[in-house]
Image (tube, rainbow, N blue to C red):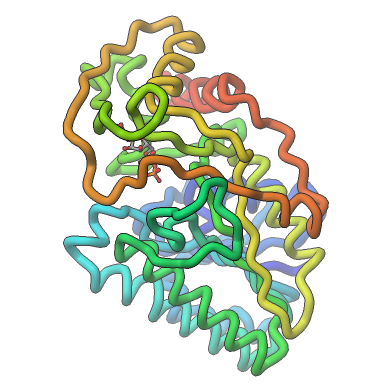
Length: 319
Ligand code: UDP
């Protein structure tokens, strides 16, 4: 297929673009490099630097079989202090993209949605049928785009798929997580192992979980990317389908740190700190729908393996 990948210079977008090229697809990456990196754009793709809202129309006029839309603002904390950046950068930009898709009759759209659309879950594991009540602007902006996709699919025949990511981690060779402002647990812990940071702060040890620290469902970025390839194949005209992507297993912050100690051989000092606002205690995906409807089978569910891939990537970048 001829595919447009927005945000293909970012973490998940670059891994997915690389897998798409390997699978024989013709890929154009568009990215404004606001948070992505030009050297993360995979070889074998065509790269266009620009604002998606501005360039999507011109690009899609060339005729594409589908769009994979990764480009987004994605910092939860920032979304609470600068909401305009999220409503403009995520919602307004995506609406422009949807209009370009409609105008040029692009048949498919696969979108990076998030577990943050659910907010504090009433039941764990979280099903796609769970109520959506985001606790932060980031999640609300992604949910707004999900809703817009439902309408465009129904009204204009778009084959739309939203993939709701849980905690993405790991790396794919040279493609990995490298944010200027790092907020995610595993890369921060690995920075401690590298000596770039003195200790890791554990945000609360008084949560209602077995060891008192928050529990998350960590999914390998390659398993996640591969779900996008399946979503493209299974997208159906006029339907908007939503799938959770996680392994269905939870690991606590303490367990993640312990795994990082084992993988890196570094003591990784940790300090119990106050809870972080907006953190749910436990987020675990029910991903039966993706397994049944897309035939998705995560191949890299082992946490130590996920951390080991992230560690290889992190070490290589500092050499
Ligand atoms: N976390 C932590 N210390 C950190 C960063 C994260 O204890 O320096 C915790 C955070 O409270 C959450 C888990 O690690 O329970 C995963 O956080 P992350 O930001 O990686 O992903 P999120 O679940 O917020 O999407």
